[in-house]
Amino acid sequence: MKNTLLGSLYLILASSIWGGMYVVVKVVVAVIPPLELVWLRYLIAILTLLLIGFVTKQKWRIEKRFIWIIVAIGIIGNAISIVAQETGTMLSTAQMGAIITASTPAFMVIFARLILKESLNIKKGISVCLATIGVILIVGIGDINLSSTLGGVSLVIAALTWALMSVLVKRIPSNYSQIVVTTYSII
Image (cartoon, rainbow, N blue to C red):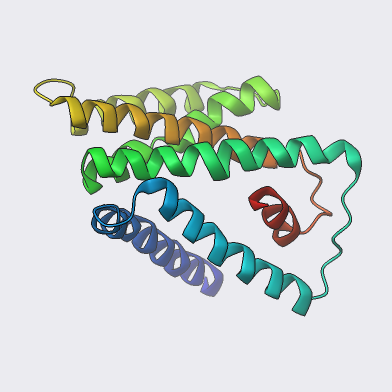
């Protein structure tokens, strides 16, 4: 019971940070353009990950056959997705950003089926359909100006690419440290 409560608290904290990030990005992109903001975020991230990696004595060696997957993870998830997410948030609203990118798990189900050959049962299929309908109902598809439309498209690209990156990460064996894989993908 204690683990369930602790896990729930961690999920609430993660959701709060994740949702609040859109509000912060909306304010910051008014001053710092999205591409520069991504560079600043990853500069801080790489320094932090390298410090943690060296302090915890991570094994930095990666087999050659996994290097291209890590490069793909970096380009798709850490470059395209984050730039698209911040651009979309700049062009639309923080609420739209949070709602559209919340569809990422639905896209993950589809990519897991295509790439990892995971089964797609009726429960997962219904979940994907309901998530899609929910985003359309909340965001809407009418009376949106050009900026919001471009922002929405950018946010959908962000959700798609983040989902693809999340599935590609599963192609890396679990014996590799997440800190090492994340550090290399950012580089």
